[in-house]
Image (cartoon, one colour):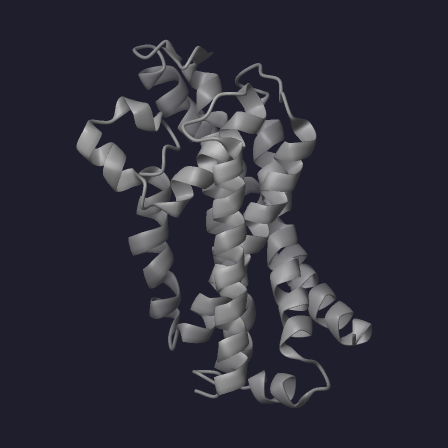
Length: 253
């Protein structure tokens, strides 16, 4: 294991994050505040409770997961796309580091950034609603797994993208709708039967359901299914990245 190489990549990415700490820190706080004003106050005044939990409190896990997934994908994709864009990807490929060490550096940094933002959102939420986390250790574990999984997806998107437009295409057109349709602001049981069936094919549903269980002990699916879904998703991403490095797909373009 080339720990020095992993450390160099990781520190470089983390340093880049803290150079724009104002945008990285303030933007999620403002967005969360607006979500609570719109959904927590306006809609919450009409929907009192969901599964025995006040609506303002119910949307906290969904808000955290929405921000975490978006940040993990964004940081994971931009981290590997930048070397491709400036041409330093060839130095990375010729360096004495294997694909797993590259993943540890880039994906580890992206997951760390997303985790940091997720914790910021968690503490910001306490300013608007009162809540307790029933399973804090599992919640942290679930949050870390979600950060890593979607940072891996972002890494794949960064390799796939050939322009900055493509870099934003998938998060805007696919990931964000999946998160909004994944039960971020409502329970899946509130949907008509047809849409409940459609939601079963949305992997984000299982992530938000499991994360909400960590907070309130209620979920649309058993926690075991949610953990199985996230580990399956992570494994598929790792296998696909391993194939990318073996085949060289889009690594040199």
